[in-house]
Amino acid sequence: MSALAHGMRMDAALPADVPAMENSQALMQADGLCRLFGPEQGCQDISFTLYPGEVLGLVGESGSGKSTLLSTLSGRLPPDRGRVRYRDGADWVDLYATGEGRRRALLRTQWGFVEQNPRDGLRMPVSAGANIGERLMAQGARHYGRLRQSALDWLRHVEIDISRIDDTPNAFSGGMQQRLQIARNLVSGPRLVFMDEPTGGLDVSVQARILDLLRKLVRELDLSVILVTHDLAVARLLADRLMVMRRSRIVEAGLTDQILDDPQHPYTQLLVSSILRV
Image (cartoon, rainbow, N blue to C red; front, side):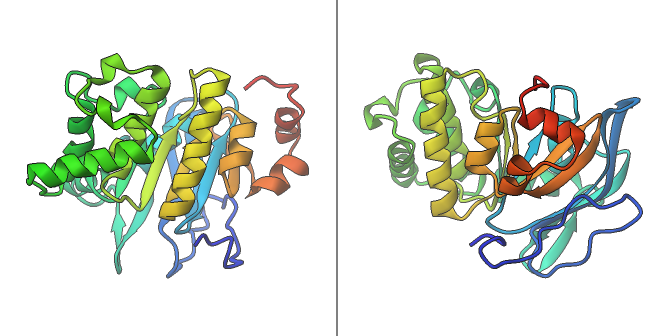
């Protein structure tokens, strides 16, 4: 169950010189993160706490720093300064103080990453079943029958005809490729999933079906999610809480309904009123 359901206080963005409080129920904490590629290009002074079962949305115009922040949080892009900590059982893992092997292990096991372009998150030359099974093999599974059964089960979960198990992703539509990428990420039972524009590039009818699927799976699996989206309708449907980014910084943060129904920052007001294209 998410922190929202327990009535917890949801941390907004904190100043860079104020570290996030140690919280025994937190899943991830970012303290004073900064990764810049130029003046106001990237992300800076980012601090927040993520709780189990929570969906945190990152919104803002193109170039605001959302994807840079997502890459830094997911172990793909080391920060210039600041830190990211993740709770692995009873222990906190300082993501960039630990070795690369530990970060890779987290991405294979406890984390997932859903790419905007599903072709970037799939192995296109191998079958749908093999794409799903690879995550389990990375955790040590070797029994062919059980691997294939898990693949069949997850094809059903994401509403792909199980007769397509031996087809390669090249034979699938864009929407089906995205469903397969979701199955590939979730088969190993991750605790935290990073999503980079998961409905981007899909037509409206396909987007709606993918969103319905994601809402169902997030709820059923009690997933924590950090979601990048430029679409405020997607944010409203999926996110418990939002952080609004502009020019590399968080300008407003809070519960999704509060942000979208009563925005306080002038930039957020522009986003919500659709005056500013995102």
